[in-house]
Image (cartoon, rainbow, N blue to C red):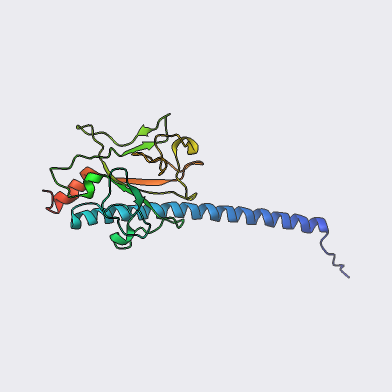
Length: 219
């Protein structure tokens, strides 16, 4: 007659330990996958925002001002240095929040928040986008023949951490940073890393001119 024996406490502990390792590995993989998805979806939304802003320009002849009251509607008039939330309601509901539930930030060159024409295509606010490389950041945008920035609009997400990220690991004195305090005209874009997870896009004035010319509205 066969005798059945139960598992020893050691054997049970080993099994539970192995299961815990497998479960932890699976959860870690799922979390990483979800973050990759969040980044991908936020980048996709930023492209949709870019197209919506260009569409707004084609219809209205200028960019909307930032939303400074966080109600989704563009504020009336915007002076140099004004940064705010993306006016998603004014864009037909496109781009309300990123994949982490935070509102997108937005800034436009003040000359492009008025009628855009051959008479005022020169930029005013000297908007700059930097990479994280180097002590003071490396300019990603090229200055044109008139020593003016080609950037007319910037939209960005604060990423997973939901806070303004600066170059050099949250260096509060950095010149190039995505922050409203103090607010400058230099912003940061780079790959996602330990101390930087902002996701930023910009629109060139030449892209705007191209769209207006194709629509027969460049005057």
